[in-house]
Picture 1 (tube, helix red, strand yellow):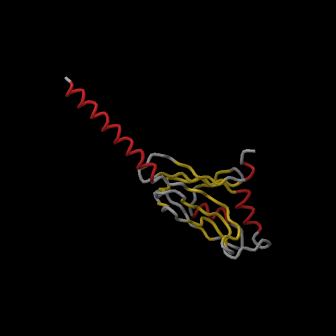
Picture 2 (tube, one colour):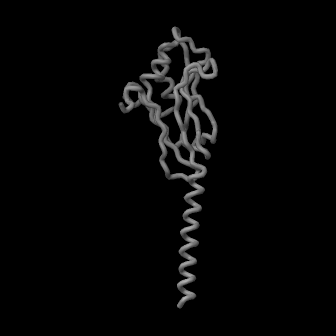
Picture 3 (cartoon, helix red, strand yellow):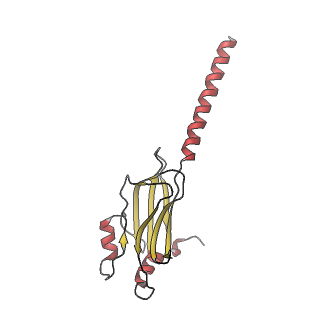
Length: 159
């Protein structure tokens, strides 16, 4: 009888320990995506940066882009063409497709201009700083978490 109790207690401890280890391993490689506006980053680059400040890779699952509150699509070339249509200067872009990993410590310049000039490119900074909202949904390599990173316009920030 006591051998059965000891065996069951041992099994319970083993199960609890393996669950704790699994949870710890998931947290120790958790990605943390941040989207930032940058003005004259490193002296030249202006636009939107995506940074993985976490300890593990982030796997992009989807993205949503809004301009002035209206959804215009995902962060892809079609959205980029709609966003920059009619402007003489075309910013550079990095697209994000579902399944794309963003490695730990990686910095991706999503939309940017090199050699930004405040007078000539004022439309671009207004777009980036006031009109554009970007949401990126992602998971760790384990999957299923549905994390979210967002760049929101100032008028959407809580007071």
